[in-house]
Amino acid sequence: MQNDSSDIRLTSLLKWLSGLPAALALELDSLEPASSDASFRRYFRLNAQQGTLIVMDAPPPQEDCHPFVDVDKRLANAGLNVPRILASNLAEGFLLLSDLGPTTYYARIQQGIDDTSLQNLYRDALGALVQMQTADHKGLPAYNAQRLKEELGLFAQWYAAVHCNSPLDQASLSAINTVFDQLVAHNVAQPVVLVHRDFHSPNLMVCSQPQHGENPGILDFQDAVAGPITYDLASLVVDARTTWEEPQQIDWAIRYWELASKKGLPVPVDFADFHKDYEWMGLQRNLRILGVFARLNHRDGKAAYLAHMPRVKQYVRQVAGRYIAFKPLLRVLDQLDNVQAKVGYTF
Image (tube, rainbow, N blue to C red; front, side, top):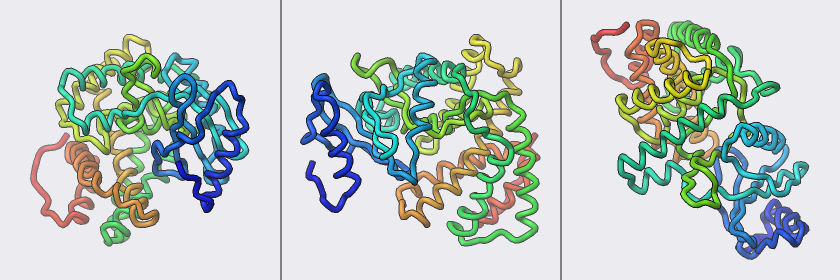
């Protein structure tokens, strides 16, 4: 990889890598971009004596590596396959990590996958999720009512007002705020566990080679919080980047619920109650995502996220149309989408 002299971070990164122990046998000339995400972080892959390694560049003050290191240890202690930290410079925001492979669940699905292989991948993910929820969550930021309500504010601020160019009037704002209060109250009443926050196909690695560890590898967990037990399941089965029809969603939800029950996690005894819990949590998450994706496009110039909006809107409508409590929200969605309200049955 050519060292662009205008890329000050890359120059600093290469300097740090060159000063690491010779025993690592890093081949600096092999350094290549691996991926980037919605934050300021970026990742590189390079060759070493025993295979490839990953380098994280998380520039301060926008990013902080300390949470990554903390959660990485928590998840490793719970028996999960997460990157091993081989070297670190937390002050400058550099980490050298083991490589969990080149293929995410999302990439594997996009390549084309048969149903047996898909089900095997997702059963592995459900097992890892249950295991993750046994991890220590003490001291993590609380995913509490205040934070959940603030996140829902992105829907009106960025999705409605900016993306749809339809600022909500006072009556509509009041109506959806009442819905949001009810939604948040229900979700924060759920048992609290370690919550990854983005436990979905782009952050799960297909680990098919022995050197990559057990499937799945888990990434991008630095924003973990202590929060509602159904949040990560909703992330997985109502994935913003991959469309799953409702029968598949329910199948995976039942499998998770059975595994969680056997593990002794505090899920409801009745699956119907659990189903409502994770649906309401999924609605919460997807309303936030509409706001986040709108902000990424309009503020940060990351237009690629717009491709996923129709899927997220469909997930929102799937739940909003099912419960009487969300009827005011459905009216607002119809207003923003300029569609006629439909008559149907809810409960």
